[in-house]
Image 1 (spheres, rainbow over the protein chains, first blue to last red):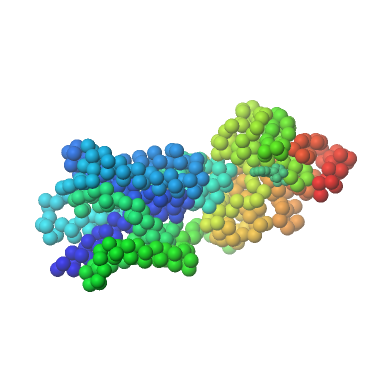
Image 2: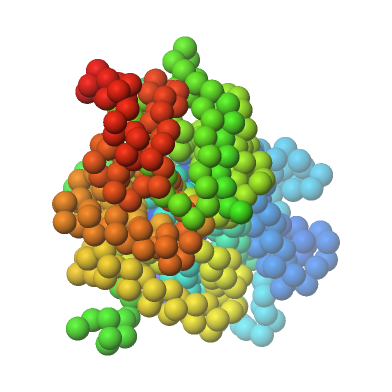
Length: 306
Length: 253
Ligand SMILES: Nc1ncnc2c1ncn2[C@@H]1O[C@H](COP(=O)(O)OP(=O)(O)O)[C@@H](O)[C@H]1O
Ligand SMILES: [Mg+2]
């Protein structure tokens, strides 16, 4: 039986990280915005939802919506000073932004309980299920979220909006010369990405029921990057596949840990080294990742084709 | 009346005076050529007018409104667009996607509409698709419609920038060496298309060409830029005979 629970846990984490990877891919793969502080969205979504529910007594659904909204708002806010920055400065600014959020969670104890974290976070519809069946329900909830977000993001990236984002990624000056308000578009992309990652944060918090700043270290951003590098960018399926691969590796080596004569710290470090190596190998030998960006082909009427 | 008026425009790069008190006028519904030796400041003029570079002095009016100081995208929305001498070709957007990208005021560019007003969005997309295919036909790019723009040859990229400009359909189009690298037959044909657009739809063109030959047939007026200054202005006939211009070209080349 424990194997099943381990499997459910693994799949649940894959689902949460799929959302995070899709969000990062939306920024990096589609819009060309390098974000080294992606974990900030995750953190804000988790804390906002938990605190709204535990401290403000809001209903769970409002916690989720609030988590998404605040994380989207954060996407908006970091876009304001950074929107005129060139790509490399943008990257540094987001890295700093990510740490600022975690340090706020750590130090603003009156609100966040500081290093102790938020405990006893309630779970949605918990009373409907037994202790044994609840994890399975939650897995379905997350699977549904992944499906919906996949669908919504696909609609967006296939729309004129998504076409603009890809054009910004490839040739920003061209977009300007065609009258596109690239600042506004980048801002909108960050808000969308923030909301998706915020949802992942809320789902995570209400799943593990206890969060602390420890959960939101820069290493998480590193994992999300590994996912989109391995899975492929500019392609939502690639992000999901990347989340599967990296989580499988990350979690299964934790499992193996018990059978290898290495301390857990050493194991953790070794895991990151191996993921780092994987990133390098992919960048060198398969820079497009496992699934490459799909070419957009328009359906034409017959009169055009003959 | 649609007019582009430039007064005393200045642009410096360090101690280099790339534009030295340039004043000129482009009348609506005409084709104006801008020629001059390499490095004389032609592209810089376009960059400043289209809002990509900040000016160091002077004024720019379009349709009677000040446009200097506006962002490039704001200037485009007023009806003035430009192409680039070194073509911008989004690597992972197909030729057809490029054309679709250029269409103006698409409601699907707003994420909310893209999700919740899909029938209207796809109706507009269909209309744009028809127009894009018609234009690609003229430019002989139909067979390349599903190629990535980044994979095109230099000449094909030039054609695509023209295509985008026609798709965007502004009132005044600044073209930076539109036929460089395009084979002669097609280049001649393109100039004819430009002429037709000007006659039929009342479009205005301001065209940079490195060589006099290419545009003298279609221009109503030609301006000559040398060392950042307008050194001559007149009909193609007059310019061709101008001693000073000939000398500048000989020394510049
Ligand atoms: N971004 C820039 N920075 C510095 N110098 C520039 C820049 N752009 C153009 N120049 C200089 O300005 C002068 C005019 O260049 P340009 O406008 O490209 O000439 P043209 O298009 O007539 O060949 C040249 O001497 C060029 O080196
Ligand atoms: Mg030039």
